Amino acid sequence: MKKRTERNKKGSTKLKTVFINIGFFFLAQIIVAITFSFPMVYYGPFVNIRETLVTSAMTTLSHQYLVTTFISDKEINRIREKNKIDDNKNSDEKAIEVISQKEEEKYKDPREGITYIDISTDKFKGYLLIIDDPKRVRVGTTDKLGKSGMKVDEIVKRYGAIVGINSGGFEDENGQGTGGVPLGVLVEDGQILYGKPGVVHSIIGFNKEGVLILGKFTLDQIKEKNIQHAISFNPFLIVNGEPTIKQGDGGWGIAPRTAIGQRKDGAVVMLVIDGRQISSIGATLKEVQDILLKYEVYNAANLDGGSSTTMVYEGKIINKPSSQYGPRYIPSAFIVK
Image (cartoon, rainbow, N blue to C red; front, side):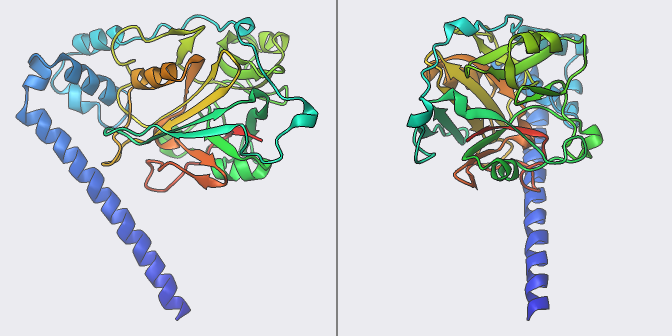
């Protein structure tokens, strides 16, 4: 009976994988059909559709042929340059006034001070969390840093946290990485765990006061600014209240998204949007930026999205990661304790 159950489970898993692969196959066929049946998408008046197709395809490694077959390199570069993001400014930490609770007033229930909002539309499924006290936010890491990663829910459990989202990028050569080696900088509890001296890194982190710091800094500057928790990723979406995407969709196409931001009162906003699925195709960076602006976010940055996009709340993964193998193994996460 036990062997039969195990065979049934294996068969169910294989069947699930087959259906997922079939789903991706038909999606690809639809895209190709549109590509060959409607050349006006490329050469006609549908500028927004053409530019979104170009930016979506060119941010992948396996589907760039969908545009390179029909559009010249010169035109592709023009479109990508048009959708370029201007995120070369650093955030002003003095503009944020953190309203943080005193130690003796800490929450008895960890869910207090956290607001959950479903931001789903007819295009995508998305979720947003608002954390009133930014000092509850920190970086959590895999217990085998440098060797292998952990899933977001495992990192959350490791730290006894209540919230977790994936954060920075990591080495993943040929899609075979173990998720244990972060790219750029990794800072936890004021200790710089990763980062090259003398190099200017793109920083998304929090200082001792709970202020979200966005900017390009060296390791020495990270120490000077007393940054306690940080990772590297890009681009920044909102800096000092100003959106960085002035025209176009942001140049990264449509995909699953993860982002983090902070309002002027210090409250931290975490966002995930599912993608690459029939029920949720994903979002552009411009759409993510617009959502964050709607919730009065003053500084915000894009985090590692795609198949890494994962949000955990109250011990459960509340979104649906796009990878057919489930949540990815990653080196770090932004967590809330």
